[in-house]
Length: 177
Image (cartoon, rainbow, N blue to C red; front, side, top):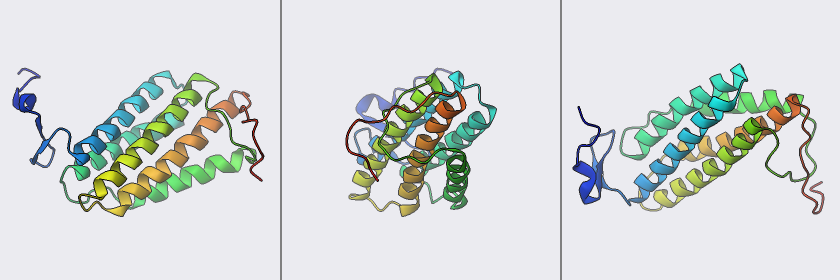
């Protein structure tokens, strides 16, 4: 079976729910950005040697497929427990990190840098979902999940540097606190 179907040649695409949509639809744009996030997380896990992080990333990738399906017309399928799971992971990581008093520059080790890149893509996905929600009713739980996911990716990036004894580079502006 060929990978190409030629169905998308006219600028429309089939979705997981069976709905056909324009490729430049706000929902398809949001779904595409979620897919981009999923791909960069796959890249991240190929560099990471941290088994726990890789397991968490795979779990998140599964969630992102559910989000994509929901954005393109499937019923609400992302379990509400997924936000609580992210919050638990964030709390666990933060309990081991020194407190943050300044903005930090993204970077450090490869895995940490890719986590910071993933965070920025996640924030863009969140903005795309907000834009799409102005034209179509989208469950608030998707925005909450993406917001919490970006928080997780941030603290996970800090943790990867901390484990490797790479100090976060502080922004040289005013102190936050």
